[in-house]
Amino acid sequence: MKGSEKQIAWAQEIAERVIKTWEALREERKDCKDEYDFATVRIEAIKNAEYAGDIIDLFKDYKPNGDMQHDVMSLAAIYSTNPGDTAGQRTILCK
Image (tube, rainbow, N blue to C red; front, side, top):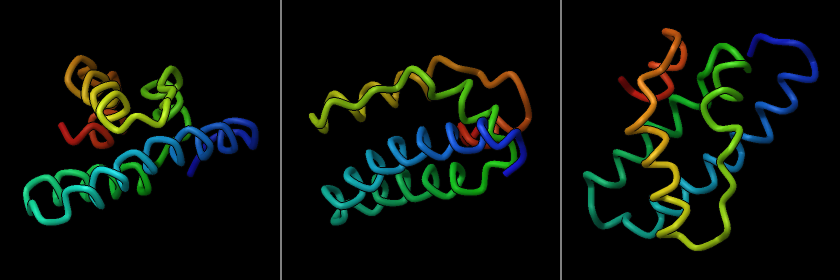
């Protein structure tokens, strides 16, 4: 991942929160191939992000509270309302 040391550390912390939510959805919906695949694609996109700034810009305000429905809906709102300002952001958002 590219960015300053501070950006990379912050992006990794943010990415962990987002990935944890997608992994929880994937585990809960493992019997539903479409939802499992949906979460898996988004996890991989975040793990393969090239720039720390893209993760920070997209997800800096994402604060999961441990309620699966709330957390997934909060992420879904980010994915559906943000068009992605850079090619990297669009890749992360699977657009």
